[in-house]
View 1: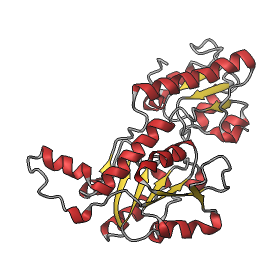
View 2 (view 1 turned 90 degrees about the vertical axis):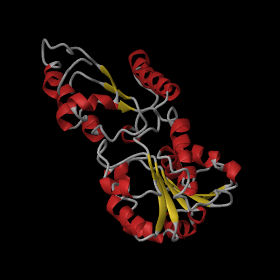
View 3 (view 1 turned 180 degrees about the vertical axis):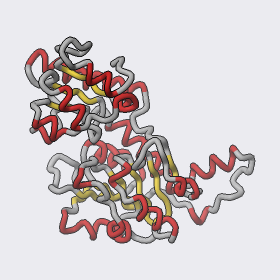
Length: 303
């Protein structure tokens, strides 16, 4: 994609334009730096030409899938390809949040060794309780990664999964509060949609036990950031580990004031191995559309 801006991109789909006749689009989030997200304007501009958008990524909140569906454009993503790398990121964030490793490294680099570290503020992971909000592919891999730490694993989905190990304990909608009250750490793995924006709100955060930790590798807007910061300020949360933020690449400067938390700049799938898996999966969906009429990874809204 060589369009430098949105106007040039949309002009390319007009009669005689450089994208005339294009039916399949491979989309990466970095395209938003030039043309913005795939909102209603973009979708309407490519409708009638494009039949398939193969998004490179598990999360597809940058695409107006409902408008795509209305215009007869299919959308696929790359589930599974991101599970290992994203869950590894979540595991790192959880370990660092419990053990305060991020602060310790900053102290070492500043030449002060571990002078500021307080062992009483850190904790081991062994025998703690992990609550997973959204046990999809990433959440399940995160659960599997915690097994060597003898962590108890609870999870909340709208419906119980029948294909997960028995040691993953299900808490349905009527038992969500019960799950939160037992959690030493809440790991968030729900997709960003209108109905999940601000899902982890003041009420949910305050139902966690005092001193709990929140890990987020999903999307920043799934958590009420202001409520989370208030809980860090008054000590209800002992730490958080965040790989995502509401207004990336901007980060709320207030978060930078907490030495006890771990922050990453959306590093979830930033490895050559995962990028390759994601690219192959996305491009395979386009190939399958052209060769068989349908890709394998339609997003749920298209089902």
